[in-house]
Amino acid sequence: MSKVYVIGGGLAGSEAAWQIAKRGIRVVLFEMRPGVMTPAHKTGYFAELVCSNSLGAEGLDTASGLLKEELRILGSMVLECAYSARVPAGKALAVDREKFAKEITERISSNPYIEIVREEVKELPQECEVIVATGPLTSQSLAESLRKLLGSDYLYFYDAVSPIVTYESLNMDKIFRGSRYGAGDDYLNCPMTKEEYEAFWEALVKAERHPLHPFEDPKYFEGCLPIEVIASRGKETLLYGPLKPVGLIDPRTGKEPYAVVQLRKENLEGTLYNLVGFQTNLKWSEQKRVFRMIPGLENAEFVRYGVMHRNIFINSPVLLDNSLRLKINPRVLFAGQIVGVEGYMESTAMGLVAALSVVSGGKISFPPETMIGSLLRYITSASPKSFQPMNANFGILPPLEINVRNRKDKRIKFSERAIKALTNWWERLKY
Image 1 (cartoon, rainbow, N blue to C red):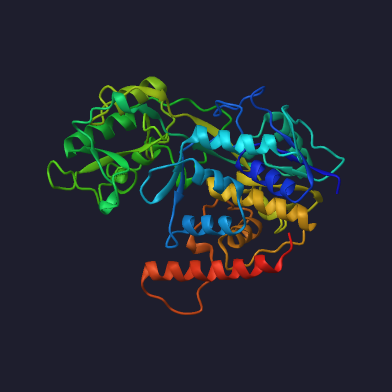
Image 2 (image 1 turned 135 degrees about the vertical axis):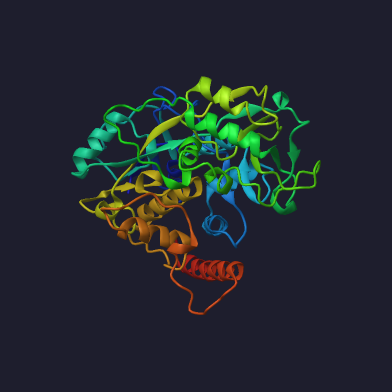
């Protein structure tokens, strides 16, 4: 093939472009930013993170950790850059988002097989294979073009991002460092008494939200709910979600607080912190008022308020085969969140799959025991009527052949089986 077009320079598009170019095939990578911006992006960097700066847990006893190990085996460029730009985050992989995006941009820009075109694509190119990796914030023009091509309506949900505050504005007299169960000191913890929590909860559920368009029916992804939506489900729901105190002991009292708000380092220097789990659609003035009720955040300086945006994904079980090619037009592939996965590493994985599909001519079939293979199976075979985005999780993997009662041991067995299957499969391929 002479060249491949990749539309979108996010995580999936960057990974796909890099993997294809790495194999000596020319790529034209289209990215509309910074000329045309989305409601959530701030820069023109490739792979800019717009939600959390955490790429999920590590360790083979976690689904996210298994997915990272699979991406490492497959030589993921995005994962390499993530480790290069990582910041302390306990047992999770978190990055300095600016350093991370800059490194990916530099790698893409310096690759002689990748031509970068900074313009909005409004119609799909006809002259070669094309990977659509425009993500959940696909432009309206391209969305309309795709709707005509697909012959079916898009599904959609809403996604929200957390606020970021400066470290110097925090009241460290009220905040303590520590991770759950003593696993380091990477998080800042704002403890709440029952009275403080209840006052915060009441203010949160009554706070004004940004209005949605009249024609838009909010369909939230359960794994990334706005904090005010969680709170509205009951006075104690936050205590089992982002404000759960389990495993955290306030060294000043020697006790577990009634509730805890955690802050995670946003950059290597530690000058910025994000409020963990505080995705929100509150008006900015309300965020400042309500979130300053959190102990230690009374004078917090917000360098970014939480925002909410419409995320689009296609009905993949109807539209795509298991190599992410469009059934009605195999020349067109989709990758990233638009196919119905949720999460940074999941999106990256779909970009890598799309690249391998291009390189192999569509003759690619991941082992079903792997996390990537199971994600592919889910998005291409789930019920079209109830299809919703999916994170990596052990529940989508095929059952083990042996019975393992201990939960952690069982997860490790899943991971060991997946790694063995992927390694053997990968060694047999010549891609």
